[in-house]
Image 1 (tube, rainbow, N blue to C red):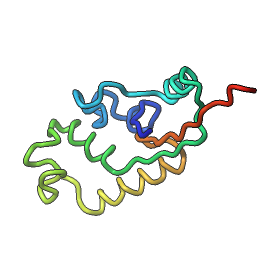
Image 2 (image 1 turned 90 degrees about the vertical axis):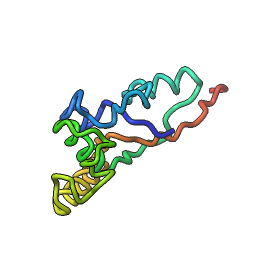
Image 3 (image 1 turned 90 degrees about the horizontal axis):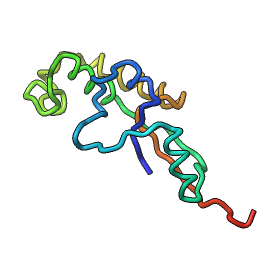
Length: 120
């Protein structure tokens, strides 16, 4: 299960301008506790989890801060050369994402669930 979640640096930093809110595509945005509860309700537990975020949490959110929609001509995703950040800044965003992943604080997370042993 791959999910975006609000227990992340990017959400705390950008709040309503966090690009991963991505309405209306995301109907649910989870917390880690919410995933734990969902697993428990289905007789499962989180075996392990990894943060799996990338630079998008920064450049997408920065676009929203600057009122640039993701599908606008000046969006990095549409026209990288017109974007306000340099290649160096984009590398910094990627490096920050990797550092947050290492700390478990990225804005996307992969959960590996296992069925609970009902006989114990």
